[in-house]
Image (cartoon, rainbow, N blue to C red; front, side, top):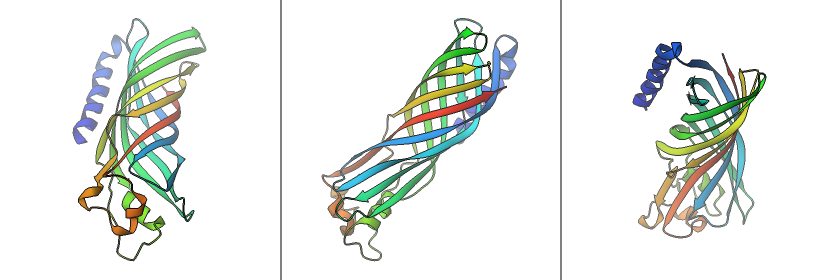
Length: 225
């Protein structure tokens, strides 16, 4: 993670050196997350996706031709979902806190001097900062949980996805965007057949493997100087 953060700031420095030939903008990005998590191996559990948020610095480097550019952000991101036992209707909220580093190739076009459009796509690198344990939360809604009978299903330390986005540009500084993040790796995975799952929540699983991927829809606002 440290190497990627260093790379982010190296890109910033490179852009500053190249500013004479192209345009560099920097600013703040903030927005809303809506999780669209998929689960393999769960049964009798309903998952409600809840809204979260993200915020952090952003840089944009525009090339002098074709309307092409590159942008990158260093974002604190929070996502939430709620597990509900369909038998008892007992629910628990599960939160995840991440450091997101999206890097996008961007095409923009000015329709008028005061408005423009853009399309963006690129990789997204996410690092788990602090997250609720999925196994412990499932134990909280299991029918027969006993004290100390807690399974551990932790999220992975990092995962990779792809971003696809579009938006509008207002008065050259304000960007309002809509983004979809497609995960390429699982955010959590456990082999249930190996006995890692406690008996208390065994009734909530179906199959040999528990696997989850967290797709995200995002609405963002960025102001660039």
